[in-house]
Image (cartoon, rainbow, N blue to C red; front, side):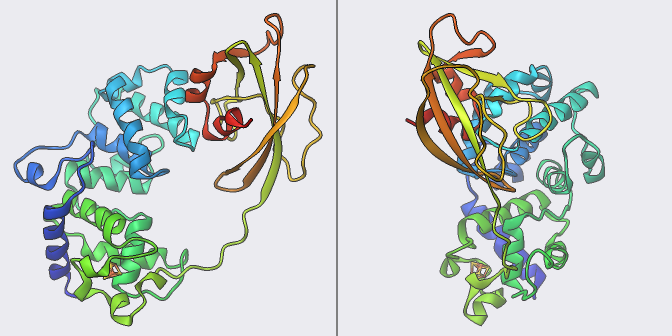
Length: 341
Ligand code: SF4
């Protein structure tokens, strides 16, 4: 593989076709000397670990409008930040986000500029540290996510299956990192993986590195990366209760530890292997709605939904939120239950 030819082709493509993203300083602006704001780079990378660019953009815009600096974010009450995070998933990350903002703000508000120092911040793993070091500070860090693994597996027609092939794919990506334009390089690879070398239908005809691609030469690029068959995701069952009083809905704060810890939730049973025999939170005329389905990382959930209306003097143990506010504050799984009729 001609490393310098691959780098030149991909960077030239990025100069023409870089996506316009709200946290990004594009290649022309960067070449003219504009530096990205490390806070925005870090925030976007944390959001993008768990969702798509399209889903993350409105959250990113809302966060940066409300908390334009790391100091502002550090001063946010945890409950407000958790509510703003609702719908982005992996709520432990939202807590780490706040912890990290507080450490950075406490140290004067400047993000460290090396991978090793970034790694020492709460919730910043190897991927985020590499991405922030490269994008915000132009450090020649090897930024490898699933997109980059896919591009490497195809460029080099790696036949070893994931996840065992990860170290090999990372080493292949490392060999392509250079001292010139590290931030642009990391983002060029990301864009190429997202827009051209797509998971199911790679656009090989429009690919700037097609002539270098071993998987294309072999005739079946979408067969890479190879994967070991996954064990089926286990299923759990539970009940959620939608309790309405006038225009308000009963919610409760979930325990700090555990799934969706610290988030607002609907009253719910335990989520168990077998459908639970669960007593409702109070006596009322409950009717069946739903069920709704939700997929978490480690299990799929079938949630039976039961709805009831109560009078103004009932349910004093709950927090009551207007239905619209509840829909905004609840994680996706409870939002689905709230909408089940
Ligand atoms: Fe991906 Fe096709 Fe380009 Fe190979 S030629 S890197 S498979 S888009």
